[in-house]
Length: 272
Length: 247
Image (tube, rainbow over all chains, first blue to last red; front, side, top):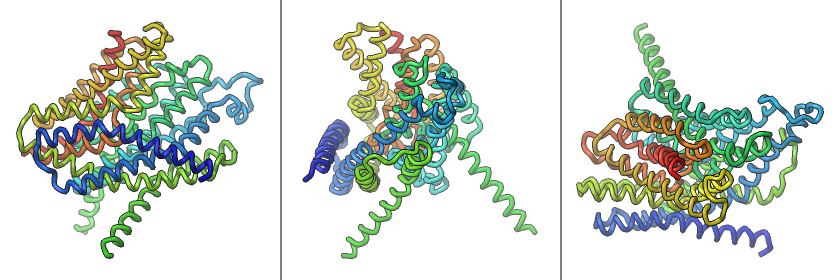
């Protein structure tokens, strides 16, 4: 085994042990309640145990792969896109002055939106919730459509969150305004979609999204003069968990509007 | 033999699905590296091996989800509902919330950074020991709040309360507390709601909620089954804001 393979092997073993440690308390709680309180064997215990082995192995490979391939690249990109040299290079600079307008960071916003969208599409927890929702709704909620809606919300949220760090405007203004929009949408939305929309806010920010988005926030806050990475670097995750709530309710509204319209059009055709 | 080929076929379908899910990331990374930053790929070989790992891992995880996590969550929800013991169910909710959050790596990282801010801002002494105890207390606060969220959420499913009253009420508390909490803690508090829900907790908790709502008569899995994750992402914001005011 050469050095690179040895490194990968060690990394995989270390991650496997780490994942085991993470799910040990969960297994302990499940076992404890299963044996002490429920006192009944679940159906197919062998299959469930096999499922846990799959989850453990899958999550380990997933994390190792992310840490080997994606996180170093994503973090390096976030750093390079927010570095003064890059912003000079693109915009020609201001005679050595650092870029001082919010629109000088054009590529940062594009990157923020693109990385927010694409990491959310790959988020395993979101896939799980979307599968469940499709099954329970009897197919009236489409798993793929739901995930696209959530990913779009995260994209807008992370881009807007980057704009906030660049301009240095206070975080609570944005979040409180977001809450107001969510409340207005809740009143108008179908009662079926509201709980799922609220849940999708929490599931988006997980294994894939958090490290890359946090690196972006930290990079931005440490480059821009007057921002402190410790204080202004926070907040992107909050944006990424608030905006999907809005986009999912909007998606459900749009989907039912289109269905309604199609039904009406279909009806007219029948008459003629 | 037929079984094996059937299993292989379904695994290939999963792999194809995972490839589709990972495609956007690959496209974004390639576009920014080649077109925007105009740089060669460092360590192309390592990146490709990593992507193969990610692909296999995602497919295995989803297979395991359908085999293990979902059925177990549902069968436990069903068993609790049949047993009819409210205190056992609430205790289970609390343990699941607290136990899965307290060791969450993302939370440990955020708590450590928060302690750094508090140390630099003069809220606590700028020493290793003070920071460690601050980070520990913060983690306990968040874990307790997630445990409490699941207790409230499970109780809500039993009673059939509409979720949005709880969430909108929670938003109002967050807004009110924001005015009184120190500025340094606000960003951390808002972020802490997002980092608590991990990849294993989410499917399990979702299956529990949906399973309960499907078993209990008069509850609808869509309107009553979802919502546990939403509560678990809201209560940490409230508790961390209070933590910032008290400490």
